[in-house]
Image (tube, rainbow, N blue to C red; front, top):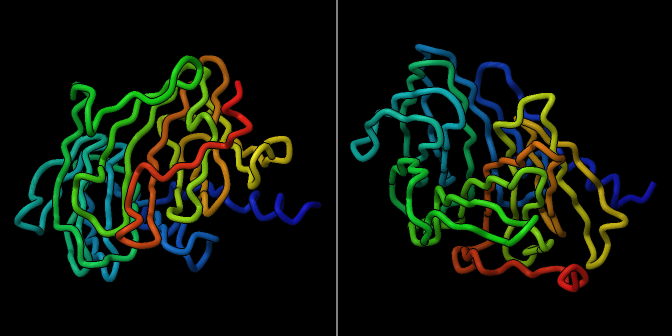
Length: 264
């Protein structure tokens, strides 16, 4: 088999559903060099201490209800899609008010960024945080959870909801000189199913690897192009993590479209 296909097939991971804190995409066990993604499954009435160490961390609550404490800037209740950011050498405590699931993005900290909380508000007007990307079958809704306007060292993160049976990240693009990315799928319980496509060279979708995705699936993008598509009746929904190779490269406008698919 083509070694590049074998390489790309390893980019898909089904994250654990067992209680506890789980490293899913980290440099020690993936091809990504700077992007880190963890999953925390916290049972009702249980506490968990998050310690950032040398990383900046950006947890988002994707299911449940939790109290966030242990930091003067962050003490408050969290509901679905609420998120927060902490710099390196910071700790917070999460107390589950009901069974809860967090996806947690991380990247090396370079001294930029302070603790901040973001309340999810689906009614935000279209602007810096709430955006619509693409047109037609490629139209999708984006909600930044950690936007470039919020100080941080490497991370840019957000949520994307594709249209019914539509494409996202279309036209295909890559940003491999500046950023790694991880797609963390959610709200797609079986039998719902979508498809995440990985390919390395312009015009090379014919040689792509197609990853089946559903709730809990995470697909790393250390390089190459990465469109996604959903079958009729299904919306691809995911939390995406961009991690730049330096603070200077922490930008959202670095994507390079595949020119072969700009023709259509």
